[in-house]
Every structure is written in structure tokens, then in C-alpha cells.
Image (cartoon, rainbow, N blue to C red):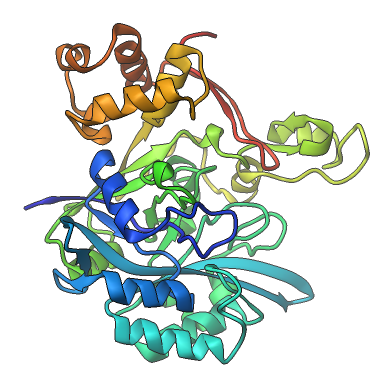
Length: 401
């Protein structure tokens, strides 16, 4: 049975603040370097991207597509939609992912959403309909679609976000809650944090990159062992099948830009207990702190930290290879030196093989000793991270305290 490494949430060149290189041809090249063999198309709701996808992609395995130049890299039709609306006296801002098995179904979704807002303005359209209504629209078109709340804990735009979310799936989706089989944990949380909530025990926890540039794909991913088939993958997710869902590949959540609470303008980062001590206000300017993911998980959790449910899917935490090379050489992650060394390494093995599988001797054959040491330290979790907060990414230190 083949192993599938899937990153199912990315964006296209038609989304705001996104690289012009986010097209299927470039994504397929980067997927090959990373070791990803299934990737979401992103943004199928955008007319320009949808047209490009229909021109570039050819039907391949059941419900999946590929391009002629890279037939071993498969694409799943995916999109993210932002719902901004008022419910129970509070403004809600919820992002959701939609997955579709073919272009006909995706097009029907686009037609319905176009009637309710401007889907041409952004690859991730903003619509004034509720998350529940959006789910109803999708299910009325096809129950073969999968609907997943995106980056479920980020403060501003998620189902459990401190600024605009809900306290439960049922509160958000009401009678349609039974059709929510999975949530996306997001970069600032990991499954271990989500395991603290018993209400999520039967929910599949997905991890994706939400990449806005090709080099960022795969910073989180899902590893399945099943046929390369849309409908089988949907079955794995809906059933939370631990025999076929092997593990997720995770960012260290502290590195995410909303892990801790804080106030970016004043440069203040707080752990949850510090936020409570300061009455949720920035002590410098007295404005409300942005309450991050760790505090929000603490608020909703009914279990201690470290609890592992019986049906938990395993996780593996990594730091992107480019960041390890950058720190080893003490140069910027986008420097020519980092790019050259990265390309040299992935010319012999994929990034995931390097980060997860190669032995010490094999690492020493393809890169220098300090980079190999950094990879081994990351595998062991031997590193320190200053947690991210209020839109500021956390800072990883692998070679120093």
C-alpha cells in the first residue's frame, strides 16, 4: 500500500500576499523536492485560478488530477472561504476549507457562491454568509465534498478563535455539526494541544501548510497509507482511521505566530498566566492583548496537558530544512548560500527523507556535519523556541540556548 504525504491547504497566485509562482507547475516541482505526492490546488473558487486549473490538470486517479510534466504528483481540488457575519450579537470571522472530487462539482459550488458575493476579488473570497449556511450549500451540491474548519485556533479567523470564534463545533454549525469530520489544527497549535479537549476525540486533526509561497509547502502535512484515491482519502478522514492515517507532520506550535498572547505594537509577549495577571490588557498602552492559541486551548480544555486519547493519530514535529541550514551558516533563510545547500541536499533525497529517515552516516554523506547535527537535534526536540505572538513568528534556536 503506497504512502501518501499530503499538504491539502495552500493558496494560489490569485490570493492576496501570495507569490506569483503559486501555480500547479511550480508547486509540482517543489512537491517533488519536499517529498509530497498529494497537494491541494487551493483557491478553486477564483475564476482565474479555476480556468488555469482546468487547462493544466488532467484526470488521474479517482477524484484526483495531475500535470503531464509531473505525473507522480497529484492534486486535489481545494479552496478556502472566509465567512464574516453576525451571530448571537457577535461578529464571527470563520475560515473553512472545501474539497471537491471533480471540476463539475467545484463549478457548481462557484456558481452558488458567486450569487452570494464577489468570488473574483481574492483567491480566498470573503462572503457575508454563516459557516453553517456555507456548509449547507456545499452539502446540497454534493455530499462527496469534505468541509473542514481551517486553522481552527487562530485568534481572528477561525472556529475557536479568541476574537471571533465559537466555543464548540455545535455552536457554530448547529444541526449540520454531524458533517464536520475534521478540523485543521493550524501552525500555532498541534494535535497534542487539541487532545486536551474531549469534544474533539472523534474529530480528525489535519495539518497543512497554508502556504503562500512554494518553498513553504509541507511545513505541515498528513501521512496516509492507502490508495491514491480521493474517495478513499475522504473515507480515512471521516472515519479517523488510524490504520490508514499514519501520522501528521507538525510545525513546533511555539514557532507559530499566534501561540502566546501579546501586543506586537508594544513588543510584549505573555504566557497565559501573565495575561490573566494583567487582566488581558497590555501594561504598556492599556489596550487589549491579542489572546493566542495556548490561552484559548486552556480556556476550553477539560483535560490536563499531556493527555493522549486512545484513538490519537501520531505526530512528528519538524523545523523546515531551510531554517536549519540558515542557523547552521548564520545567514538569512532566503540567502543564496541557504538556497544552494538546500538544492544540493534535495538533489539526492527529498526533504522529508532527510528530516525523518536518513541515518547519521547517510546525512554526513550529503551535507556538512553541523547541518547533520541540526537535523538530529530537531528529531530529538533538542532546541529552544521563543514563542510567537500577535502575528510575530516564534524564534527557533537549535545550536544555542
